[in-house]
Image (cartoon, chains in turn cyan, orange):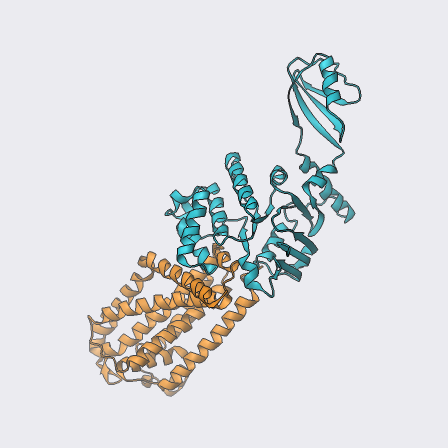
Length: 315
Length: 257
């Protein structure tokens, strides 16, 4: 089966000579939930723009399910749905009309477009708002409207450019659930996000892009394996004394009832708990100090920059 | 996309355009009717009664075809210019650009929207004109074909204007400084027979003159120009403008980064 997305030697030089992409290659398999990560200005939106033909590429090839966007434009586009970063619908149009019209642009008969619009507006909790002008929706509703619009033709590949930016936690969780649901149903999803816990929770594979280059392209699992140590915060029932010492572990007291423990990757936690228990300290809860993926992301981007002689310059 | 799907996409764009100009009819349909009614009253009834005949007919009958044509030209142009620029400005054009809709369907859809508004305003102005004069159609085929082709031509011109425009000012410059002078000097209010020889020759270079006169021929049977030449010139302009619009769309200039 052809990959859901195949990018080969893709480059983009803007009119002001700025190199947005420097010959990137990438492949996303059908059914994947893929994260495209990178700092602001790294080239994520340029890549998405080229895939959906809003940005003209300078060189390279892009194929969607085997359909080259230059040669088989229509088939490539029919397989693709895009949720952009910025709101890009007519603010004066009604919610239902926006989704139904999008179906029309894909050549869907009006009846089918209406049925699909109802299906996705209901799933995304917007059906009650169908006759409201889009400008009257809240920010979260507008994001969901763009998702419903991108799904009306039921694409096999859905690309979301920071879909949860500025969305509250509850809504973000419900959007995650929805995206996982359509991914399980067979839709390949590519997601760009600044929330790394989002990528860690949802995605199986990822690419990190910085300064127009792919600096990492692997599975989330194998990336997380690169971590050599983890820091946990433990909350205790008993008061922790100032002289807390656990042999073989670097322990740092935070306050009377919490401590920070640095643990080498792969080392058992049982020994730690036994030591603490022996000192009469019982653990009531435990959590990671920082998002693991975030630590890796920062180190990968910094490594990539120092290799390119950029010395950590912001993109 | 197969033919049926392309037709669906075309109807979607056209329906959306028609909904737009009918939803805001106070801005799109009413003002030109009021303006033309004032023209009928002032130039036709008040001043026209003192002018007497022009081109062998009374002045009111003479100006009516020109005023109908003027409303068709300005409305078909401004509808596409403002609508397409608004979709660019709000970035809702991306809804169509990410879809498989071919560029020629995008052009055709917006042009049809402009043509329908131009014809809708032209029809209303024609109905209003019946309160001031009697209209007997000399040639229905010439009347209809000229008005439709002219609306198509100016709708495409409005599309090109919107493609190049980067601000709302840019879509008012062409109508103000080019379209209005060409229209007013296009034989709406006078016959070019009245002009001195030099200015008569200069007027012959004005494409609007041919459209107005061909339309006047269709209604009254009189024209300052050869109607065949008028048709050829309109068709040539349509071909040239449509070619330019499609070239710009396919090249992605001003639409795709």
